[in-house]
Image (cartoon, rainbow, N blue to C red; front, side, top):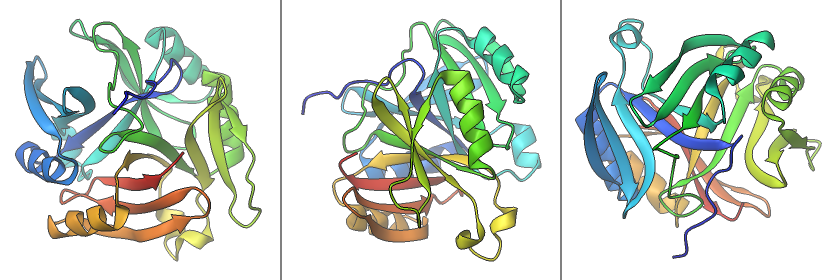
Length: 263
């Protein structure tokens, strides 16, 4: 299969799972996506590169002691590629974001920071050096979409547009106010506002980013995930004229989505 165009500066370049159980997560995602694991020793502990074939698809690390003590569930963190992590972090803070971690160097691989946008969604910045990000993209077993669920779509649109230069494609269905993020003509993610349509506990759902991984058959992979101990949050369903997707929580509670179709 020909390699897809890789993520550009200003778009999502790396999905990373912080998990409570490193070995169990390796086994689950290895079975689900066919990912191979390469464990790397770092000053902060073991880090696992997850690959499809020889192409890198995602990262995996243990949650911090602080996160575990706070009862934070395992979670996926989405990295945005930037040319200057320090300058971008400063700009984000000026726009109302919080700098949760960094900026700091990750050995010779790059420089990063972890931020929380003004509505509460957490994401990371990545200034690449040796490590450029995913080398598997827009293919089965790889990142294909990153989606923001937010408490205030208008405010989120203003923040990310001013920070990264993103624009949004207006919803085509008034009954389903879904925005698409664009940069340089490329569509790489989406946004929707958390509302009462999300169920009785919708006010308790925090703003968050969610990763989508492409698969050949959403129904079959969702069933396989469930057999491996995952929880199905949203069973497979169609997106008219786009594809089919499902939302899943892995056995440690990290939420992600499966996608089948064309973006």
